[in-house]
Length: 357
Ligand code: SAH
Image (cartoon, rainbow, N blue to C red; front, top):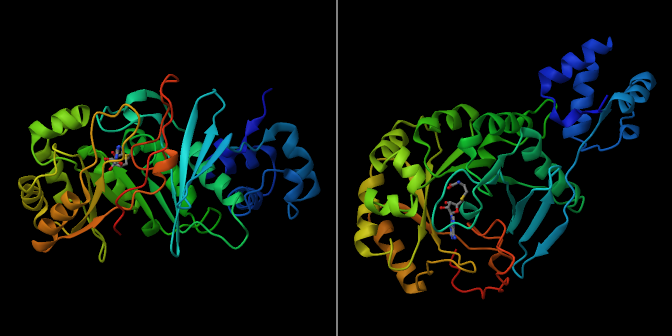
């Protein structure tokens, strides 16, 4: 009999497992706490379990964990973790220190369902969805490798993959990340899910209680079909904006719209004016992401002046617009740079340029 990986069990399944063994119900809660709150990888550590339980667990079960094959450190403090999975595929997670914040950017798929033309992950195609425990394991693995006084403060589901194309696993992962009684205990307001715009599934994000970011990236269907063909064909701009307007925002929260700035594609004054019109009336902020180049990418990053001019038009209309600091570009750890490159492409270190907070 293969060992049962305890990390693959949700809370209900853990309770069933413990009940089937004839153990006290309380043991399920204890084991969950060891796995998620103490990040245990060994049964010996579980000192408050009865001796019988502790002795029996390794007979039938195991605790899987992710171990990075590589940790690439950027000059700006960002670190990219490369995690191999059991089926010999790999995912990447990016740790981003920024003042008081320590954010981890998580992957939700190996590759991506979508085919956005400016994104490196999109070029891999979808290899497979991650399971809930593989999403959570990224958090546990990185937290284990931090100094004892360093705590992750924020999580963003913005790494490889489209989270809402893998919504069941993401939902279960969020449950384990936010459960206060036995889980990792993150406040949902410190977690942000970013979607390319699967309009019909925005509701599921609302149910998870996490923040929603929508990657808009274009202001006309013609443009969006070119940049984000798969998602815009399924949910054209008007459908997406309607779903955004219907999104049940909690008090004091706002939607984030991400907008990748591509030179000569979507960075004109007219684009900025159209963007303002599109989001008008929605409680939101806009994150402008100057394009992060990768070897072989067809697009260019606009000049700093063009980025600032675009921002000025949006802010002048009364909408908050921030320029996303593009961290980790020298290790291909910035937005849209995660994924495998064809082996023949040399990894060229990219010189840091504009980064206005
Ligand atoms: N699939 C989700 C999450 C992953 S992409 C989504 O689309 O939102 C995370 C963010 O990076 C998105 O806003 C995306 O538009 C942006 N992005 C993708 N490629 C990029 C690149 N090369 N440079 C800058 N931002 C990029």
